[in-house]
Length: 160
Figure (cartoon, rainbow, N blue to C red):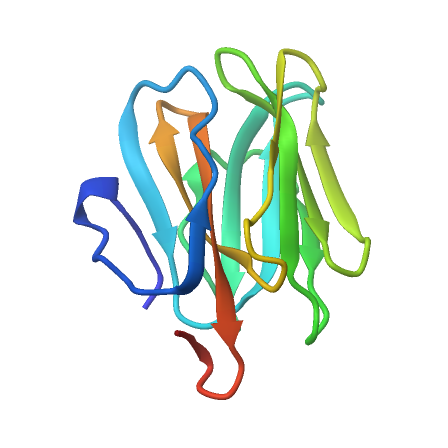
């Protein structure tokens, strides 16, 4: 099941080596969490005229989550290889999330938005952890952003 749900309703999930990155952005609006089963296999990001982030979406397995924010035009998309994982999220924020950079353990990345505002850099505390889900606030476009990390158990196709 893939949902964008209010952050307060996300169930407590036990993950091996779970960590989260402090929320960035001004915030304001409705809380969201993108939670899915399995491993993240792709990400899409929409931007406004090479300016701020308009919306984003994750794919778990073969199923895309609902979009956080808005869709406008064609998204930029990064599809991960079978053995690839997202291990860093960087960017900048002001009133909205201005830019996002998703980096994989294979050195590939997706760069979106305008690099203006206050910089942030998010990564897991455990070397084998990867991006598991995202949360924050949205008021039209995303106004805040938080990354959640954990080790993925490939034997059971779920996290520990």
